[in-house]
Image (cartoon, rainbow, N blue to C red):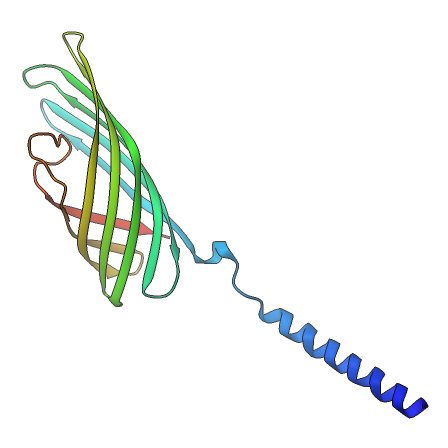
Length: 172
């Protein structure tokens, strides 16, 4: 009886020791796969100025696929013929796929609220939606390339002069 009890106790202690060693190899925590970044844009001209900031966070599901969200704020001041001040703010949903390490395919849905104030006391407000598909070159934390807005409407879009736009992203 004594030998059996000693053997059971020994097996339990060995099992506890092995279980304790496996806990050191814990699963990565959620925030170990989260990257933060985005972009900043400043444009100055004789009758036109713009400032934009777009922070975002993405989660790396694997080495190839990432997804996340972003927020955007844009300030535009156009003094050409009529003084117009425009504030845009909103959010976006992002998805990235890397078929190879230097190339990234991106999809982004963006919805911005546009508030325009004219010098002659008229205010206008509207929503502007965009659905971008892009391809980017990736090196380290930086990606750059082109994206195309499939919802682009030349008459209603005030942020872009074309459906094809350059994109530059930095994530840490």
